[in-house]
Length: 197
Image 1 (spheres, rainbow, N blue to C red):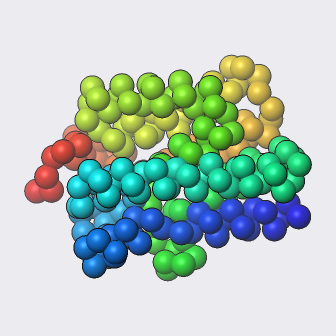
Image 2 (tube, one colour; image 1 turned 60 degrees about the horizontal axis):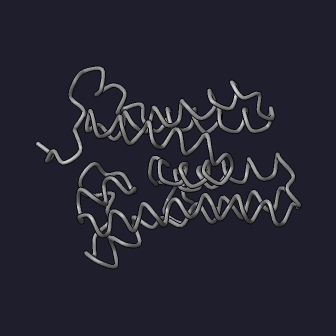
């Protein structure tokens, strides 16, 4: 049953709302516009605040629903719950329904981690918002978020399963942000609200 729930979570994560919303509203493939990323930030840049916020909430909901579904179906089995959340993020990043070309998993990660570890996730979200507000680098804020969660859990001596799960999430986040990290180091990363040159 655990494996089935994890597979279902991956399939749920593979529903790319950025692609679906862009096709519905503007009849475009969001992956061919802006940064080419199928996620909330690129939707915001290309289609505006309304669609961007909608995609953010829907993508976050995928992660939270995957965790809730796993908790319900597995009776709260730690490894099933945690890795169903991880599977939803993997589905968002590499969606089977869209040629394995998805987003960077930030919104889905937020939803997943809020469902898995509400207080640590809330602390990390507040810090992330502050980082983005101060620097206007969404990618930097995202990296801070990925990094903080496992650190907070380790400091609070959380379950090893949760620590391993959130470390896995952090690794996935860093993998999807390799180009952003390079641009941040080079000083060429675009800031929020900055048009593409």
